[in-house]
Image (cartoon, each protein chain N blue to C red):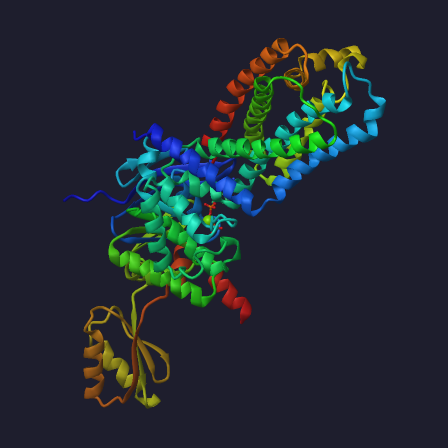
Length: 323
Length: 257
Ligand SMILES: Nc1ncnc2c1ncn2[C@@H]1O[C@H](COP(=O)(O)OP(=O)(O)OP(=O)(O)O)[C@@H](O)[C@H]1O
Ligand SMILES: [Mg+2]
C-alpha cells in the first residue's frame, strides 16, 4: 500500500490585511504519526491549522489533507478530520454527552450510533461521571478533554490539536499528554501546535519549527538538537591536578575536535561516535584519572529554538522572570 | 468534490434546531424577555395611550392586538442573530464548520427553532390579548391564516436577523443592531395608530411598510376587514426579503474565516 501523506502543504500563503500570517509555507506530514508545529505567539500556527481544517481559504499555494485538496474538496477533508481549536468550543448549555451526540449526528453517524459513540469517548476521557452535567460547569481541564473527545466522535483519521495544553495545570497537562500518546499508539495521525519544547519532545515523532509564517527547521527532536550543536561528553575527575593528563588521554581519541577544559577537573569532548563514552572511560582508567562523573549532554529544544529563530520562547522568558 | 446529500442536510438542520430548542428549555430567560417586551408594549398602548387613540370600527384592543402579535414574532426572530453571534464569539461555529455537515444547516436550524419558539410566544400573547379584551370574530380558517401570516413574517425576519448576527459577530452588537430598525419600522406603520393622521412623507412610507401590510392583513383576518390587498402585499414582501436575505446570510456564513 502506498500511503498518502496526512498533510501536504506547498507554498501556502495567507495575509490578513498587511499582516502576513503564512509566508509560502511548505510542510509534509506522514500518516499515522504525530507532527508538532512548534512556534512562538503569532508564528502562524493557528492560521495553518485553520487552513488545513478548511476554516479559511489560503491566498495562494496548495494544501492537501489525506488526499483531499482543502479548497477543491473541503467536505472530503471534513469527513476525515477532527479539530480541537485553540479555545475549547463546547456548548455550555448542553451536557457533555449532548455535545458529543450532536457532533456524532453531524458526522452523520445516526442517532443510535452517535449515542453509543458518545458514551465510548466519554468513558475514554474520564468524563463518564460528569457526562450528564452541563458543560458550563466543567473545569478548564474537563472542557479541554471534552473538546478533544468531540474530535474523536467521528473516528477521524487525522486530528488537529491547536495548543491543547495551554492554560492547563501540570496534572491536566500530563493527563492530556497521556491521551495523545494513546491515540498516537493506535495510529491516528495528529497535528498539534505548541509553544512548549517539552511537549513537542515528548509527543511528536516529527517537529516543524514555525516562525514568521514559514517552517524554519524540521526533523525529529534529536536531529533538530543536532543541527544546533553536537552532543558533548562531559567528564568530571576526583583530582583537579590530573586535568592536563586527562586532556592528553582524551585528545588521543577521535573526538569531534580537541577536548576542552571547562574548569579544573572538568573536561568536555564533542561526540563523534556512540562508543566515545566507553572509550573515554577506558582511556581515563588506564591513567587512573579517577572519574567521578560522566554524562552526554544534548542541547535542549529551548536552545534549538533560540538558535533557529533568534528568539526566546515564552516558557523560557517566564522562567527567567521568575528567577 | 464530495457533497452532502439532501437527507443529511435535512437531518443536520433538525439537529441544529433541536440543540437550540434544548438550550431554550434550559435557559428560558431569553424567551421570557422576548415575550415580556411585547406584553409591556401591549399594556402601555392599551391602557396609557389607548384612551386617546381613535380607531375605525371597534375596540382599541382589537386594533392593537394584531400589531402586538406581529411584533412578538419580530422580537422572537432577534434570537437567531444573537445566537449566531454568540456561537461565533465562542468558537462553536469553528467546530461546526470543521464538521462534514451541510453549510447552511446552522442557519436553517436556528431559524426553524425561532419558528417553534414564536409559535409558543404567539399562544401566550393570544392569552394575554384575551385578558385585555381582544376578541377575534372571524371564521376559524381566517384566524388560522392570520396566525400563519404572523409566523411567516417572523420567519422572514429570522433570516434578516441571521444576516445581522453574522455581520455583527458579537452578541452585544447583534442585539443593538437587531433593535435599531424595529422602531422606525413599527412606529411608522399602522401598528399602533391609523396612518391617515401621519405627515404625508411618513404616510407614504407607512403605506408600503411590510409592517403595515402584515398588521392590516392580520387585523382583517381576525377582527374583520378587507384582507386580500394587504395579504398579497405582505406575501410579496416576504418573497422579496427571503430572496435577498437567505442567499446573503448563507454566503456570509460560507465566507467566514
Ligand atoms: N483573523 C485575523 N485577522 C487579522 N490578523 C490575524 C487574524 N488571524 C491571525 N492574524 C495574525 O496572523 C499572525 C499569525 O497568527 P496565528 O494566530 O496563526 O499565530 P499563532 O502561531 O497561532 O499564535 P498564538 O501562539 O498566539 O496562538 C499574527 O500576527 C496574527 O495577529
Ligand atoms: Mg494560535
